[in-house]
Image (tube, rainbow, N blue to C red; front, side, top):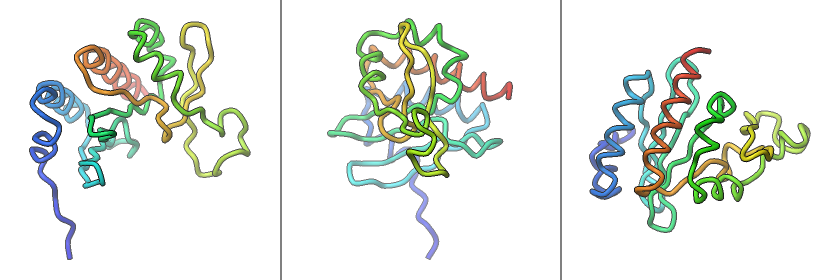
Length: 163
């Protein structure tokens, strides 16, 4: 039996009207930059992953946690936009600091050898070694975070395009 394709609009309705403009804006930007959206059902809603076609690597995904929408950013090139990260609001900086550390960056033998490793960058003078999978760069969507998330995603895509 073929997999059922979930319409993007189903996710958009579930996310809520307060997020519609941001989601549509980021969706259009990522599609223009050679990413495709893959939508799956999950226990708390949908998971929408954006995959960069040339590298076949995920750049971001939306997830629902505690009935709230979050975005996980796969910031492979975080060092190239340290200026953006340094100007994030405190709530976003706290989310980064509280995110899971990457065991493999800290000790290369501590994690699965197929692990893609996390993100290694500076935040307010402190080295951050954050896990790709365990809430490393995951943020709730709200009016404070949305403009910063859009800038992070633009800078991440610019860096990936240069590679």
